[in-house]
Length: 247
Image 1 (cartoon, rainbow, N blue to C red):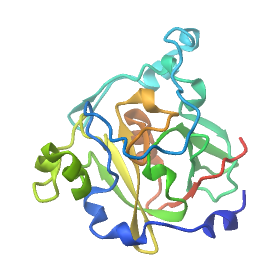
Image 2 (cartoon, rainbow, N blue to C red):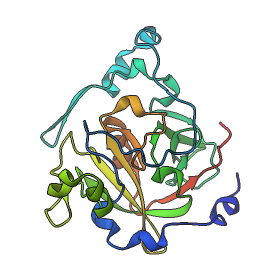
Image 3 (cartoon, rainbow, N blue to C red):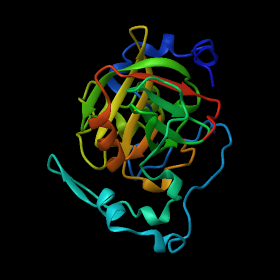
C-alpha cells in the first residue's frame, strides 16, 4: 500500500464539520435499537465463535488483559474474549503499514487498527466498523482525546428518535458511563483543521468486534480503547484505508 494511494482519494466530510465536535458519530445508545436506514458495505460476519470453541486458549495473561476493571469510578465488565476470533485480540505484530512510529492505521476491510511502534512492530487491535467507518478515508490527525466522553446525538438522529432529545447538545448530552455509546475513551480525528466526524471509541459490545455494526465509526472494546488511549502520542497522525492491508 502506498501513502499516495490513500491521500489522493476523495474525502467526503468537509461540509459536515459544522458543530461536529459536539457530538461526533451518530452511534445509538447501548441497549437501544440500532439505526438501520442505510446498510454498510457487505463484510464477513460475524466474528463471534461458539462459546467453547476457543476455551482451551484461555490464559492467565489474556484473562488479566480483558478482566473487569474499575476505571475512574466506572465498572467495566469483563470481556469474554474466548468467544471472539483470536485474531481480534490486542497483540503485537510485525508492522504491515510502512508508516512512521506513532501513526495510527485503520484497515477497514480487515477490521484491524494498528499503532505503529519503533523497530518494525505494531500494536494491533480488533475493531468493529459502523456506517461512518465505511465512508471516510485518508490522512488526518488525532486532534482531541476524551476520557469518559459525553455523548450528544445529532439533530437528525433526534428527529428519528425524539426520546433522545434529553441527550441533545442543548441539554448537555449523556453522562459518561458504561451505557454511554462512546465508551471509556474517544479519539476525535481532524483533517486540515476540520473535524472529519471520524471517531475511535470504546464499547461494551464486545460481540461487535470484527463486524460491520449499523451505526458509529470505529469501536474497540473498552479495555482495548483504554490501552490505545494511553499509547497514542499527542496529535498522532492517522491513516484510514478502505483497501485491505496485506497481513
